[in-house]
Image (cartoon, rainbow, N blue to C red; front, top):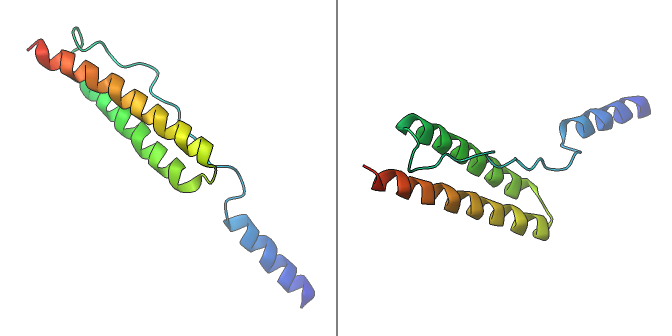
Length: 93
């Protein structure tokens, strides 16, 4: 009986996340809206959207307030950079 309980506990521990939350990396580059093609801007949008989703998952998992604040600030920085390039892209049309 004790052996069965020990095995059950080990299985339960294996099913819960033991490792720290994985913080996603920001997109490596955002194209220059003044010269980028529509396809480049759409690809950048997908990358930024994926980063946003990853950050949202990270924020739901992470317990440390300073890490949450830093991740949120990084998301805002990436979004601001992307939005500035979208504005530049739209103004060239």
